Image (cartoon, rainbow over all chains, first blue to last red):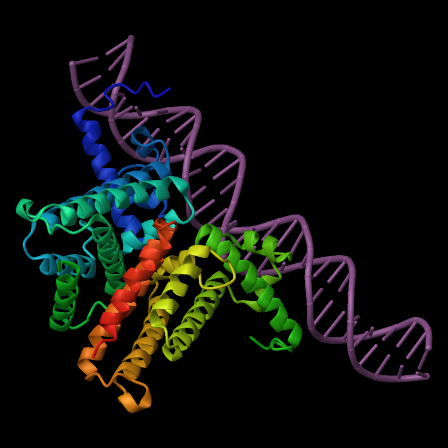
Length: 201
Length: 201
DNA sequence: GGGATAAGAATGAACGATCATTCTTGTGTG
DNA sequence: CACACAAGAATGATCGTTCATTCTTATCCC
């Protein structure tokens, strides 16, 4: 059935990339359900039927977009973990979400993913997997010994603090949508105070 | 045009209520776009055409559901404001979201609303209006004099703390979706610590 | 009070549009 | 010629919405 030859040729990869790029733009603009295959095809400048050569169906495209977004999120957190200025990185999170850049981490897409996760078990599993990975990563970091660059927190304490941190970041996505024009300096001071508390021994 | 007689008869009100109740259930289950009018009609046990006697179109139903959800949220916050145990009330927020009760404040619906607000200006305006009202309410509370039951905080300080509080609550909606089985006691301790800091002089 | 009449309430079929998906056909290349 | 690639037409289903029609209820005149 899926004996498609040269399935992983360089051309096939490029085509898939074209489709995913267009899909991401459409999903941000209209949402997963309201964005149609015709819409995506037009954005990708190809026929609608052709997309089925590279993806089994629409939900496969949705899954791919979500997986890619989660991967980018994890990369962002990993960078954040090795940084020296956690507050600045959190502000950067907010900044990217506020910017509504269709290319990178996007608040609209993030909200859509989470909303869809309440209905689709497959999407929920993907989000949960990513969430768990991030959490374990951060907890390990906070509970690592001081000499190894960590804070030496007991695991239980680290876990609750990471929960607050994660909840705060998620909430920032929503706040970025409704209050995109919030005062930057006040926000900075607020986040710095929060971070200071989360990283205190 | 809209010379519909007895538009606000007791019967009409009851019918609208039936429709909204069914719509809420369908929207939670499938989302705003994936839930069809036929689906809602079936849930409300009436014909599809009849709904157009009480609502102009589908988006009017969506708007009504959102408006009602926002109203309930404001009522919840107002209750929270007069309470003595803020931490317990925040936990109650999380608990309701976790419960997935189709009748009351619902995390899935809340996420869907915010996601849709990134595309629909009318929905965005409604959410922002409600958000602003809640914020002003809370800021007024925190900055009120001590003798009047407030904390006597300077308005700027109150504003940033309320921002954190609101962001935290929104984040809890997402956390409730992905981590519904989080340890209750740890969560309680965490939230209590956060609240203590937010309410400190 | 009881049958004629009008209005309100509700139905379910029908509409055109659009959906995701598949099929047919054409085109260029090795 | 053969074969991967692509376009675009066809498909059946479903979408939101409308409409002609029927059922139900109230009003009026005698």
